[in-house]
Length: 206
Length: 206
DNA sequence: CCGAAGTGGATATGTCATATCCGCTTATGT
DNA sequence: ACATAAGCGGATATGACATATCCACTTCGG
Image 1 (cartoon, rainbow over the protein chains, first blue to last red):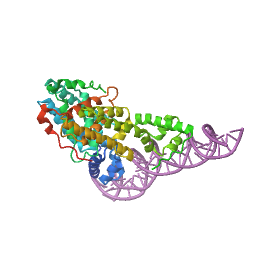
Image 2: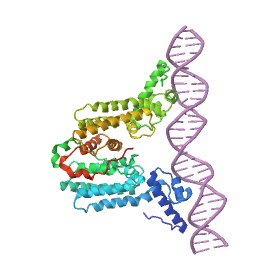
Image 3: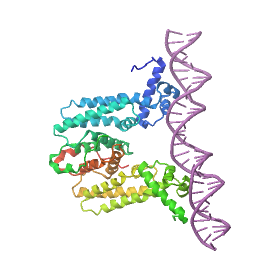
Image 4: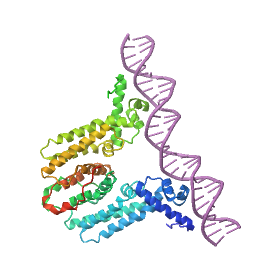
């Protein structure tokens, strides 16, 4: 369990930071499929230097994103304190997706469960859990449809992500449009009683 | 402009059909990134046989999908005849996405404007055009929000597509849920006057 | 000033898809 | 029946590409 941190030479530590900074930029711009060569170049270092500190790309990605992801998790947990659960959930999703909007790598990490470390997986689970609490509470408060489920969160995030990947997604941030549309659709609407029945049954747990 | 069709030997024509059938299945199951080797194997043929008839994967994909896509375009055009434009658009999108749901390759083709032939691009443009007419007419009929645009179609399709790509998207077809949600959100709702103002400005043309 | 730590980047390695080539087989019509 | 053009298979050349290593050289730090 003890992390070995052999104490780096001053220049080495400096280069480690340069590597992390470059990785942040490159992953954000080009996604996680960017090469470690790319990262190294962008940092003004040789490939070997990068590989000395990080055994592979996944380790580097984790070092870059563990913090970012955990910030999001913390935001979700903080949202639990809000009075209006519906508003809290909406605000959280908007903030979280704002992060994602500027970071392609983060988006890919959030989306796929593929090459994740336990660390990342656990953090993501925490986020989903908080969302679940918020949904339940919003339903108790009568502000959210009863047929909404935690399992709706991932698809919703995926949908908004997909809009951000669209070529046109440049300046005007159209994803906000659709997030608002969807969140609005999750609201309780006493005046449209019959409408909700057209929904199919909720998705089942993965 | 004249298509050379040198008249194939009977067995060759047969194998051409086998190739097309195999390509349909393989592309539908694994997407367009499937190799021509995969397709050939699946057809019980050698790679060379496939390459004899189709110069490359793109040509094969076009042969496979030109018809399917044009069917969708025809459906869209037919929808223009419907009395209620909102209903017609909803029904069309549902039908079209039903096609996409069972065909990964079709989805990829619809989505990316990348390696398209003119043919495909034109067909897609036709589909979008019909959707535009339907939107305009629905707005005249007062059943659709005034701030909806043709440029909302692509993002909406992309969003639903992304749900279909999700691992959980197996049996229960959760995409119907979300399509219903979104379409419902595009409806005019006189009882929620203030709500729509929260939308950001419509996306600009690509 | 010495030795351990660090560095660069050419390159070995491995994977994978595309496309070709050519000796052999089969269809076809006379 | 046979000649011959057409077709076939699939091993393999080709080329991209990312990962990861290696080692001669440089730099740090006590």
